[in-house]
Image (tube, rainbow, N blue to C red):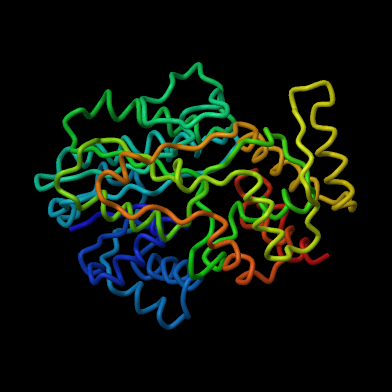
Length: 385
């Protein structure tokens, strides 16, 4: 039996749909927050309906086992199905950029609670923990980053999410050395190669905004590491099931072969006729004497209305631009050496993403607004206003 956390999220939902397609969904037990099994299945079906029609989503949601609860509740759960678990895919996470308590409660405390219960699972063969490639912190610049132990707590991080993920890896290694642990670190997961941004427009709004404003706080010869969710979820299934893995840590990333240079990024948007693109991009250094003024001026020119939505979007864009400023990609040689399929380049599925969306940049941003603690202020009515 496979215990899956995070099945109602973007990556976890894609992972579960892969199980539906390959006929193993009945062997899945999904931990989902909800008052009862019916409420949990409704949450799962709602998430899956972003990738398929409602009837199919409800049918898919009915195939698996459901364990109502959260990560912390596993410590006291007496559900006998947990003792039959052979594999764990731990995808659940709070991806918030701010320092709210839930980031640490879920990403660190919750992970350790799951590990404590996993220690008592007599049939467990593999515990696949999903981290993030950006647990490397903010220091690397213009590098191909290789798999390594995350830096310590003193290292600079752009977001509490990445800091907490680094802490979780350290805590797992220190407290549970006996677990059959494999860590997978996806890079920037955006879109789907056939569904585009239907399952989620998360982060894609920012790439559209980058092209729209035409300012880039990065080196003109730099690059970014972007991978589609369906490729990532397929590789996670393989990492979970392949019996003879050579390593216990893998980047699930674009790597040298599929990383996106900024020239390729701009050319891909131009080739698809992206509305309002401003090219060639103007590169600037946010640590230089002008600071963020080039971005602020370009943003105000394209989004002149000074309402809560645009102010929030500017905050979010600055955060993402700090990741852009690193100009890094993540080596995936370990993953490819296992015989797994290489990722497509972002430019190869950008058209699918653009064709699948009918929303403005601002409307797509709302998918990410919760990461910046503005989810209560931004509603469909405020976006339309």
